[in-house]
Length: 310
Image 1 (cartoon, rainbow, N blue to C red):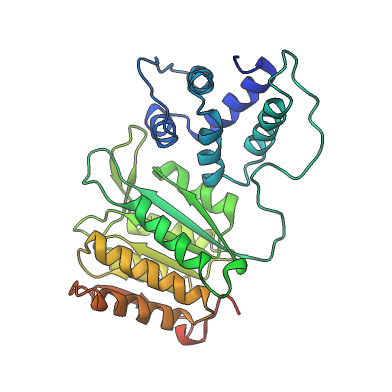
Image 2: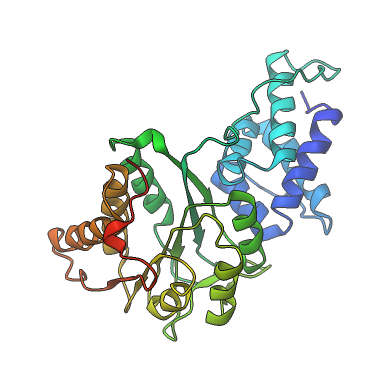
């Protein structure tokens, strides 16, 4: 049965706001296992999402698609509300009339004022760059935190296919304590995000450091897990207590090893300095010979005194 119009329109509007271009819509749909076939992508994002949601419902992939979106934008109220309305409609047996939406705990939303440490995982792997294992990296971080002593103290939020235009809104929306970037870096020392076409766009060091200076809020640590990111890490460190960057190119296995061990240590209540040292040591234990590539920058605090959870 097609999604009821009263359910479909708010869902399409919310997703169109978050994924307004063809590239980001495709990435989300494909990540949810949706077979796109010959779906025409309309110039208006809301029209595109009406078609995508109709096809997702026909393929039984609506809930996986909404789950993927909620994992990236758990605190975006229009998505939370529309997602809950869809869940209520499904629970009611997909009636011809949409059920009244009773107030309840928001669908897949993080409780306000949770007092937890929020890690924001940002990933970009533009279509014209080498494929990276960013999914494996976020999975490894999540696994490390889940097995840690203070696992209940952390929340891991994630956003994929991050565009240059998304950066400010993601920091404003999530207000994270830790920002982790997984992706490419250019040989001239700039991280690479995506443009509106899903292709590579470098971020100027001045612009990146400014956004962290203005929106630092709760941020205590930034990890740029990307090749040649040390110079941008140095610039960010003027505003953020602890920043990790890479002095040269780093391979996927080393980046994955570092991230897994780094967040495992934070999850066991260790300092950022100890977490960093263990991350580098894990690269060495894996015999990858890249243990000196990560660099920890901290000009305003002693990183061996910064503990995020205890």
